[in-house]
Figure (spheres, rainbow, N blue to C red):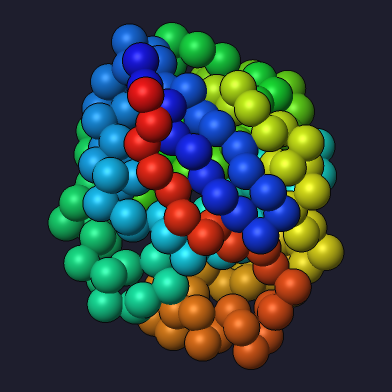
Length: 175
């Protein structure tokens, strides 16, 4: 087990990674955190009682480099999506890349859809709860940030159209 500390615009939170739950996801998350991928990422999807999601790099060139060609296979679900657990977002089977989310509620319905938790927030869940949630769901369902536009336009799009979104300042592996 190892931990990742996220310094955000609202304060810090810590994710304890439990590799046996989802080894492929845990290893990918380690490499992303270790490489500084999450530094500067906005929490673009915050739905109270459901999830907080982030992981699109503010630099479109970096997002493009981590696109479809870096998909990882699914891990079997060994830990349920309960409050405080962390999982990779997907776009269907075997499509995990870089986006992750923290469960804000009991979301066990996601288990049967293949969302395998790889860790849990052990410090700072109050910080996670404070992340800006005023924009709601993104396009095409709502008026919040459009993920395709974030990938293509990066921070410029978010700063211009969704300036209240919180962000990570830096994420680091801690022992």
